[in-house]
Each structure stands twice: as C-alpha cells, then as structure tokens.
Image (cartoon, rainbow, N blue to C red):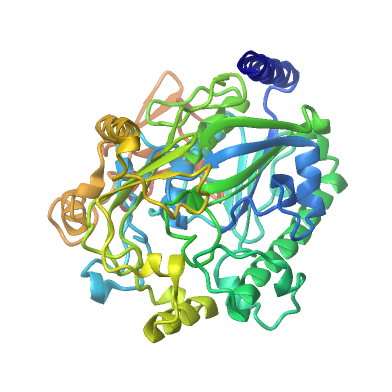
Length: 537
C-alpha cells in the first residue's frame, strides 16, 4: 500500500513538472503575457471548487474547471494590511516593518500614542513588485486598493483608481491589472443585513465555537450570500475580458487576502484565518482541471508573477516562484505567519504551519486570545457572543476564545482537529514534534529578523531619526554625458521616476534616458519617506 501511495505521489509530481514545462513552452511564444489579479477580501476556501457546495459560484467554478486549483495556500497574517504588505513586497511583514495593523490612517492614535498616520520604512532592497514589471514594459493598474502599510511610490503603478483598467494601456503593451472586490469583507455582513439571503440559515454549518442560534446562522448565511454576489461581479469582469478578446490571452489569478471575515476567523493565525483559495487560469484553459497540493505562502505571489513575465526575483524578495521561467517545482515544507497590534490592542503571536501540525508561540500569554476591538463589534454575531459570555450562556468550546489567558505554546493536529480546539503542546506523545516546530520558528526568525520585538514607538523613532516627521527623500541628482541623462538618488532604496513635462504618469528610471529638446521632470521616493521635490532638466 505504501509503495502504491509512493507511485501515486511520484506520478502527481511528474504531472506537475511537465505541466510547468508546458507553461514555459507556451510563454516562450508570448514573451510578456497579460496577467490579471482578482483579489477578494476576508474569504476562506468556502467554495464549490474546494468541496463546499453551500452556495453556487458558476464563474469561480469556471476558473477552477479551466485552471489550476491550489489546495494549500496561506497568507502571512489573518488581517488585511499586514497581509497585503507581504503580498506587494514579496517579503515578510515582520521583517520589513509592516506588521502592526494599521499604520496608515490609524483609527486610534489617542489610545496607542502613535502618529495618526505613518508609512513603515522598508529595507533598502524592497520595492513594490509592479515596479519591476513596469521596468520590463508592462502597463500596471490597480482598481482599487493598496493598503500596504506605506504610501506606494509614484513608480509602482500606471493607474490607481476606481476606473483603472487594462483598456487605458498604450497599444501593444502587456498589462498587469489588479481588481479588488470588497464584497466578502466582514463589513458587508452588517452593510448588507437588509438584503435577501441567497442561502437559508438552516442550510449552513457552524463551527463548534459558535452558539447554534439564529444570529450565528444568519451571519454565516449572509457571508455565503456575499460570496454569491462576488461571483456575479467576477462574471462581469470575465465578460469584459471576453468582449475585448483577451480572456484567452491573459493569465488570471483569483485569491483572497486572508480567511473568513467572521468572529474567531479573521485576525487569527490559526489555520482557518490563514488558509485562502488560489485559482490560476491560463489562456485557453491550458492545464485546466489540475489540483496542486504544493504548500505556498502569499509572499510567493509576487515572484511568481515576475517569473511568468520572465523576470528573475530581486534580492529583497523572500517569496519563491511556483510557476513561470524561474519556477521551483518543489513546494514549501512549511509556512509562517504573525499577529501583532490590531487597531488599538497589542499582542504578538508567531506560527509555523506544516502538513498535519501547526505550532503557535504566544509572547504575551497573560493576555486572552480575544481582542476587544470596537470595529468588530459591529457584527451582530460578535455582539451576541459577548452578551452570552456576560450571561454565562457560552458552553464547551464556545468559551475557548474568551479564556482570561492563553498558553505560551500551542500545538494542533489540524488534519484530525480542523478547528484546532485541542492543544497538544503539553502532551508528552507530541514532545518531539513540538521541539522540531519550535526550532523551525526560531530558524525563520533568525533568517528574517523579526521587528515585532521592537516597541512600535521605538521603530518609528528609529525610522524618523528621532524627529517628529518622516525623512524626505533626496531629490535625484542629474548628469548628462554622451547624449544620455543619468539620474541618481542619495536616499536608501529610493525609486526614481521621470517623465516629459506635461505627462501624468511617472516612468520607472532603470537606465539612462536619451537626451531630447523636451523638458524632463524627475522625482524619487524611498518607501516610508516623504516624496522628494520634483526636479527638471
């Protein structure tokens, strides 16, 4: 039986290997493929493509039928901004300083003592990855969410707006276009409360830590109903691609920023808060119907897009490309994630998640798992659970979230215990696994130094050199020789942009510019710094 399983596993590996080779062959005939990201919010793999038939999603199911379905994809945080920081940079938010939720438009400066808004200052070798695509001739658009924990440099995108689309690109240019749908965001549970449900509350299943009442069932049914609406919206986007003759000339990614926007799912780094769907459709449905069981982190999205465009990952990326010219056929052995400040509340939790087991380290075990966040209390289910807690009406597993403290270490056999309710950390039968995963987490933090150990105020003080405002990026210096214009910037890691006077979009400076009679404007920005003054030549 074990030999049979080995043959099956080897057969799947060979299938995947040849599939990647076939994609490389396809891409060699189309050097720069068009790429679209369909980005949804707050959604676990709660879809027919992943075995959940509670609601129908014909358009997402079409992508799955004609594409590759990835079964083990995990984000680096269970909440949006730190997760999106890691996705746009291809690096861990704990390493680059984007780990606290949130830094831009901080909702609670009076409670945290932090600036109303600040950008995390990135290490000098980290960029927004669309900048590399632009350097290689891509037209990049974002419709319409950034939320990276920093203001993106003007060189990151050609367009960022609610009207941004591939349709505005210059003729003949390949495009990378992001379309973000907030339809499944947790806020839409209460925003859409008066709309008709598309699934009956009696038809949904509940996790064991929810009370089985109408409030919980209605909330979960609303989440499923929002998924159905999301699917409708994706259908409109796919129709637009078809109308433009681009559906079979474009690689389509569908993914979400973290798990469900439901209580004790979102913001957590248990598997349910990190596990997300990923479906990739290639032109003409090439390779369609394949399931890929490799373990993938969301920091791998950026280098994979670059790899599909024939671009090698830059030094600052920790992500691993899993498709394209530079793909590695072997998946990750494990993934890592983190939780830090959420709105006005501080915590620090780190995890390593691997096949079968998940290990969690709590740096503040004196704090409860539950964080009393005002924003989340807008959810009817959250208010209902808090009311039941005060009344002593929660029983069994429903009380776990609200225990006054949490253990220093947690270990779960998530395959047998999918909701991770039984902590095995103190069970002597699992001592060797606990030690192994503890060391794996230590090694990760050694390889990617964790800024979560530094108090946030001290981080900002360090980034701002002890001043009360961020540093300003130095204005680029300009030199001219042999008919070329050369630009440089003294600020660390600065992205330099240039344009002819009168143009709207900044081009990425990556090589000398041919000198002309037109006036050239130039600008620079290090991520986390203020943008430089604009110079002219």
